[in-house]
Length: 256
Image (tube, rainbow, N blue to C red; front, side, top):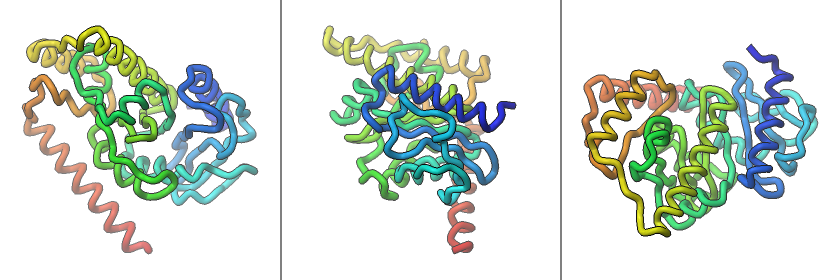
């Protein structure tokens, strides 16, 4: 298990990668890692993600209160904390503005076509969450409609969000998301994507299951392969998740 300081170094490394790849500009973006039941490491506000050092990383609790660090966390931290509260399996959240994927988000075009085997296996369809005002509860409310079933989501007129079992898992999903968007855009400029047949998509989801790929995958929404061949197990899992979310919300209200 990596130490807290090593995780801070990892956050700085991922910050450099998203900055160098052009996924963020200026002081954009946020990176968090959950390190305990009630502790989260987060990037500071007003600092370029490409020029951070471990001393800049802040530790907060699940209510967003600063536990250590001299700088202030981003006002969008609440978006990350909401994910952790409703997705206990998530250990890292990354928010960025990868240009091509964000272009799809601005155009209102979700990335839901079954064209790349790697994307079908790793992420499935990538929806667009409705627009919300940054730093308000509007964005957390919008994204959680989708993140119960997805590990990547576009944010209307804003950017993208990916979650993972660890920091680099979340980062690589952001890379995959932007790569998918670039290929989709080029294919459309050349006359349109050639979607994989329904039978091939089914086989890819069988491969995903055999490989034991972790994370949520909503399946496809265009070819019909997942129409809703929702198995009883999947239906039960969805019901269990719904009950958990409702229970957490009720308990949260009782604590107020």
